[in-house]
Length: 176
Image 1 (cartoon, rainbow, N blue to C red):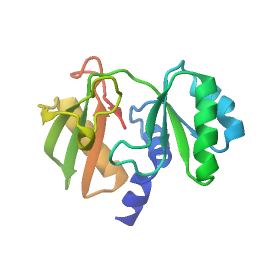
Image 2 (cartoon, rainbow, N blue to C red):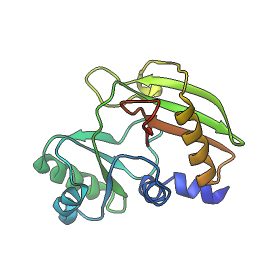
Image 3 (cartoon, helix red, strand yellow):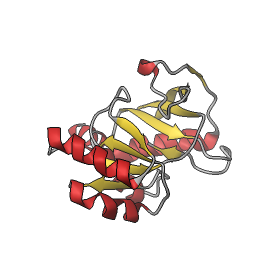
Image 4 (cartoon, rainbow, N blue to C red):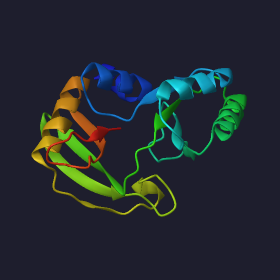
């Protein structure tokens, strides 16, 4: 539906839906202006590094950066907004992982799942950028969570991206 598309096209709106529906996700804050970077970082309640990304798009991983300091975060935001002052930006807590998962849910059923390895010297796992992908057997918790998320978002065919939890059998994955 167009509502599902609009919701999924905004990482920040998706995050708000995650919070509303008790879906585990990395903490996320919008950056509304270059002068609000420090406030947004404080609200995030985490340490560096953090992830800076556009709230829209980035299906290929382009536009996702690891930021190691407040000084660098401010400079990157200023530079990005210099060229596109209306680009919606978010920062997220960084959750270290060796891989993430893409789960395809169609009509309330998991139809496919893949493990996407994080690339060497990077934090991204986008296959289009060279990350290796392989099939993965999901736990029943991961399957049910993927189906629940697809239903909450109102999608008939939904790609759900997860960072696995430390205990995949009993702790919900983090939804991206």
